[in-house]
Length: 300
Image 1 (tube, rainbow, N blue to C red):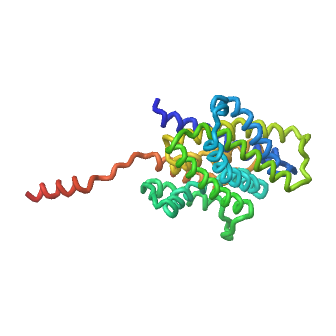
Image 2 (cartoon, rainbow, N blue to C red):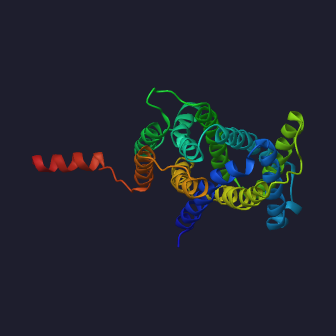
Image 3 (spheres, rainbow, N blue to C red):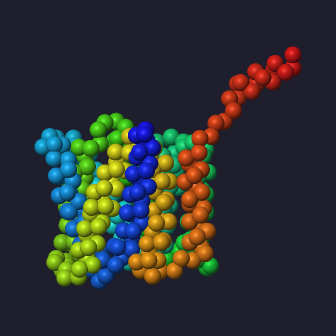
């Protein structure tokens, strides 16, 4: 199996973990500070990945540490804002709105890097955008606080994916993984400390179950696979693959939290799934020069 196809499968599996994590996080946070939850999540992920990538940890240099730290900033902001979004809206809706990253990436690349995406990526992105519109915009054409937090978080996450693509294509991304999560843990610890009044050792079992699941599967596994895969798959395509996440998220929210699967979720989710298929289709535009030559031959 080609590495690209292998990472496609691993990414889709990871989106299932991510989709489930929205419900797990909402259940785990309860009355606790979201940032405290993120601190423990990143701390455990850092410890696990330090063991897995020990040979890289032993050889850490200043370049890997600086790169990892720079990647951590948009990642922390993105996850923190989306975690706040979960506290103000349903887990299923938050997971769908988070998918707006797919539209933001080609736009940011075009504005900042003057790098246009392929036509099919734009078609897929706007198909997904319509799906997100169906899901998140109310009959009064308003967007809730939770959706707003999630959209801003999606922008930060888009910046993160673009940075990852840039770093993974210019060198080995693996040495930066542990420094990145260690920086995430430090930043969330500082946020927790600054906010104050934190119950550092919550007694609720659901809190710690959420930490273990999100740290091992949603963080350590998924972000590691995601970072490595971008050596073979573009940021635009990775973000579209991520749109499997809200589909898994909607069903997880239904079975874990008892949230209703509405017709809007099904219609919007169907359009998002269609966007994923469009992005993976191998289109071949007819060669203009060849067509002109054929046309000239016919004249003679």
